Amino acid sequence: WTATRDKNCKLPMPKGSMGFPIIGETCHWLVQGAGFHASRRQKYGNVFKTHLLGRPLIRVTGADNVRKVLMGEHSLVSVDWPQSTSTLLGPNSLANSIGDIHRKRRKVFAKVFSHEALESYLPKIQQVIQETLRVWSSNPEPINVYRESQRLSFHMAVRVLLGFRISDEEMCHFFNTFQEFVDNLFSLPIDLPFSGYRKGIRARDSLQKMIEKAIREKPLCTQGKDYADALDVLMESAKENGAELTMQELKESTVELIFASFATTASASTSLIMQLLRHPAVLEKLREELRNRGILHNGCLCEGELRLDTICSLKYLDCVIKEVLRLFTPVSGGYRVAMQTFELDGVQIPKGWSVMYSIRDTHDTSAVFKEVNAFDPDRFSEERSEDKEGRFHYLPFGGGVRSCLGKQLATLFLRILAIELASTSRFELATRTFPRMVSVPVVHPTDGLKVKFFGLD
Ligand code: HEM
Image (cartoon, rainbow, N blue to C red; front, side, top):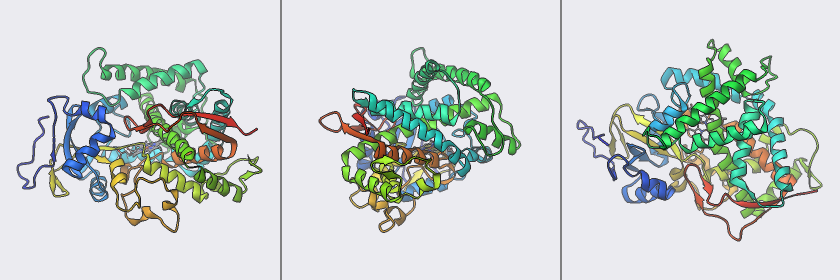
């Protein structure tokens, strides 16, 4: 609230409103969702100031402005999550590390998402997706797609990625506690009984206890490339880099991995299913590609394992996933702090101010996308390649040294989901109209998206 302009800089401050003392414009933001930023951007321009979650903030939109922020990591800006998020994720998380420590931690994490590691997760991911679709299809009632996609991505993170062997009952408790943690990650940093912040801290402590128990009970498998799961790879990679992880580091890394994949993947899966429902021609074109490549035969998925290289070579599938992530980008943006005063779009960003670069608004306002609001996967085809017309117009996974580490894993998951949906499922919207989308904490349909699934047998 007390952040002020840099008097040594002649440039004006960004326009905008700071709202009420302490809470600033937090309530407006929570009520209006994506509309909050859109209305202020229209009023004040691509770089405007506001006050959210207990602190002043400058919100940045547009490829050129975002490029300057992302490429200025470690010189102009540094990571700076809201206090609640930063405390709940912990000091050892990648999200909270800066400079050399961040670079070293990222190197350790990178192996978790290498080609070999992804190849080893693939059959398990496919199996989890197949089982989930079988359960959805055998349910006579419509499925709440967003809620069930959250369970699916949580399952993927906990059982496939981390290899935890926990009972269904423990899984359910783990899931509910994690929900509580995520619901309070972005809260006012006021530590009072019943405050969101206090609830988040309690959820984090219980999560860490459960994780410690699961890690201690987990069989280890760190021989050669036959990785059992990402936690094995992470521990092996840390050893190779000369820094074994302490239990506290492991617990924080685990929470971070689940957090990074949980809400984002669930949001993208729901948007994917919604777009396939809305656009039967796209679904048919996808099936045609699968038939042409021999993956779909006589209306069934061909027996035999899907290979990573085959999945990655499906061009139309790639366009569909890219378009879902453009139009319904799960992460709205990233938080930074100005390390020095700098210029952006003709105004000053004073040292010490928080900066949030916007992904969603940048996609929505980018001039490189023709008919920006239309769902048109072919815009990413080789002939059109609209995303290649300039960097930083398309950035669902962020950019620069902090870009998403799980990008390949997330797209692999979405590709397998689309292949399984196109080849083994029939699905219909169970409501008369499509629901409205809201954007906090991630993009999702207001009613969760009610869909009736049928098997093909
Ligand atoms: C960072 C998006 C899935 C792990 C990021 C960032 C974005 C993003 C935009 C950068 C945030 C910033 O600039 O501050 C997404 C989307 C996903 C997804 C849209 C799904 C569709 C995943 C998955 C994992 C993951 C599945 C891992 C299991 C990470 C990590 C970072 C990150 C570790 C932090 C990187 C760093 O600070 O160096 N993600 N993500 N993400 N993501 Fe993802």
